[in-house]
Length: 145
Image 1: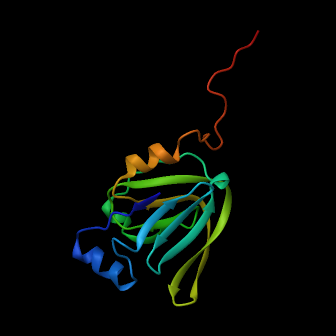
Image 2: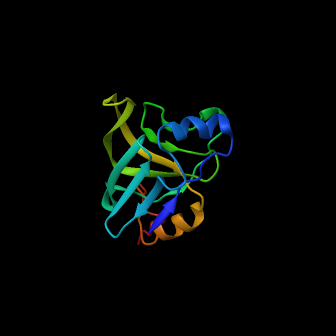
């Protein structure tokens, strides 16, 4: 099922994104039976096996974090196209991702948590998290007999 990314309505944010082909039709997340495809124009195009991913959750994204392909160089990576509807999904194991800077030139950064913004994050999370275990979650309760 395809979920479209929310594109920021502020021209200062949306115009630079448009230069890289990020539009309401070209920025989406495809949730398939065994994989998740995240695409934001020519800025970001990655495929993840669902077995690599933990439970998704809403993630606060203040305006000063900016929009575009974002990273903190410590594990958070992803195409954030709006400050609204941001979702974070932890990876079971760190994975290197390529962030293009200019054509084929770019950076390889570690990804521990994938972030992106969607028009309908709640529907996505309900479908994505169905039956999905939490990453690095211990037992909810322990019974000692």
